[in-house]
Amino acid sequence: MANTLESHQHTLRKPVSFGGIGLHSGDLVNMTISPAPENNGIRFFRRGQAGKHFVQAAMDNVIDTRLATTISDTHKNIVVSTTEHLMAALMGFGIDNADIELDGNEVPIMDGSAGPFIQRLMQTGRKKQKANRTVLRITKEISYSSGESSIRIRPFNGFKIDGEIVFDDEIIRTQRYAINLTGNRFAKEIAQARTFGYVEEVETLWEKGLALGVNLSNAIAIHWDKKSVLNEEGLRFSDEFIRHKVLDLVGDLALLGCPILGHITACCAGHTQHLAFMQTIAKATDCWELVEMNPNGKSSPCQRNGKTTTTTSNLLMPFFQTALSQPAPVPAC
Ligand SMILES: [Zn+2]
Image (tube, rainbow, N blue to C red):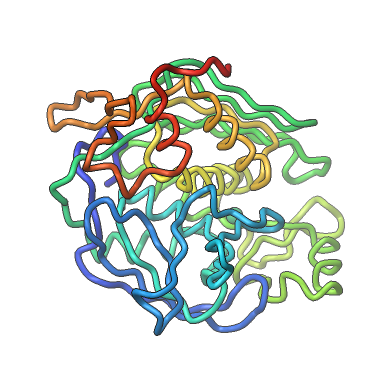
């Protein structure tokens, strides 16, 4: 199972396929995740166009954060929506490199959680690769806030999240969840938590032609009375809502392109705030460093002054490249 402190990159043992409807369109989407070489990162292709256009799973490629996270390449040849649950499963299982083919514009919503993804990924298994992992290690606190939302990250030798949400109803109210993402805790505690929404909000979206794929088999619907859920099977966890928010955060942060060593505290945040937080991190170049993990559990900083280590060159996002090319850190936090 995944561990941020693992020294080596991993890919899948063999391809694995999924089929399901898309959240936005309601159309059937087929998806195949295939093993990929070291330093490839996660890339999305349109089925039948492998080797042609692709979009790298990266924060710089995010074009929309309403309802779900959507990424696209520069020329909009490929648009991939609702990346977050799949990206969370890949990160939770410790997959650094994979190529993903889709015959639609959305990752299938499955049951609204990352459960079906992580289950199949675990059955498929991981393959250890030669290259060491590059990790973003937080060295000083970085914080972001906007209105009621806030996210901050502090130095920590692992990956820990404290999440909180506050809703004005009788069923969610205030929920908090803290997790140190080690071993199989992501799969056991977070992956099964489903997305959720108020019935009246879903009805409004339907009227606008949005969220056409949402139904009770892929989302928790909170009743008009705001005291119960419409789903006959009820909740999977009494605090399923905050667990899902933590899942979304893990999936969006995966768009940084490498694991993080840090302790995150997030309050009332969604996809838009997650992206803004990543952009805040990107600018705070004196508050983090890129390190290469070694088999002995220790790490060594990647070189600066324009010398990018060979093992990390393809995985690095443009903001990492910029930071590495700078002779000295720029004060930003
Ligand atoms: Zn979600």
